[in-house]
Length: 64
Image (cartoon, rainbow, N blue to C red; front, side, top):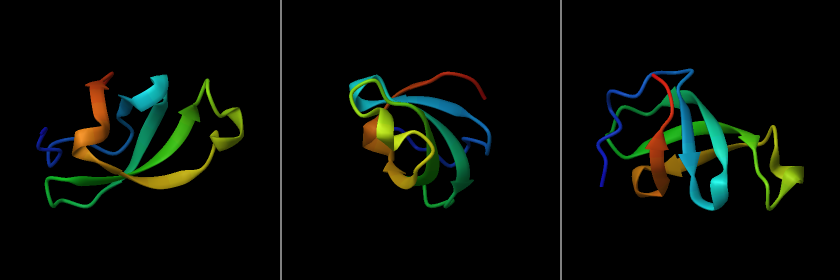
């Protein structure tokens, strides 16, 4: 599992199902980030929603 403590606000992540999300808050605990959905091919209605993301759900850090 990735330690997400160093991931900064504004970073884009690739998550499950090719979802692209932007970090809007890092909880600082090494496991949880608050993200905004930017792209969701399987569920386009989720674009713009904000949710918590666990470190194990991150496939790739796209920029930092």
